[in-house]
Length: 205
Image 1 (cartoon, one colour):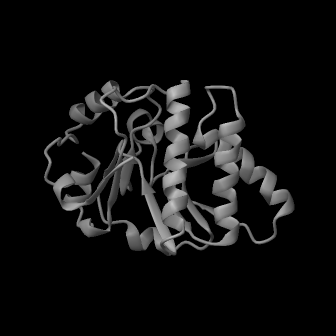
Image 2: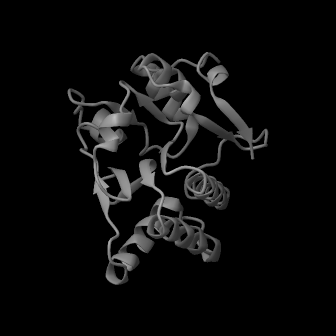
């Protein structure tokens, strides 16, 4: 669905690298050990791509894009340009500029999660915690917040009904996949065809 929205919005589909877990299980539920393990793997994929490219734009699959936002996001300075999730930086939608500092923050986030025995901690919690630590000791680390009206999460867009300026919507603030799909269907945002999927680079991990 995310890829189909990107195709309709005019994204260059050859830039997408789609990573899929090699499993037939249902998508992991938020605040579980399985979800934490998935978020570790996600960060490892991001770090791998940071070693290949100067810029990496990560887009979770529970996002619908209304326009090609690549250049808009790139105009922001900093090593990280991130969606604001109201309580912290969102690791579901963000641009990273590869540098020793940005790689270090992602690696520290991975290490934090691997050392954590609390299954309710995920990549977003760990990233925000490690970011706060690094800002006290690392000169030059800069993280920019995107506008919550232009890059809203589920709370802003669906609950607060702030839609007029939205360039995308991240359907978070729901714990499992099924209600996210139902919400997209309710608002006419669901397209589960393979059109966009067949146009991107695909990897099983």
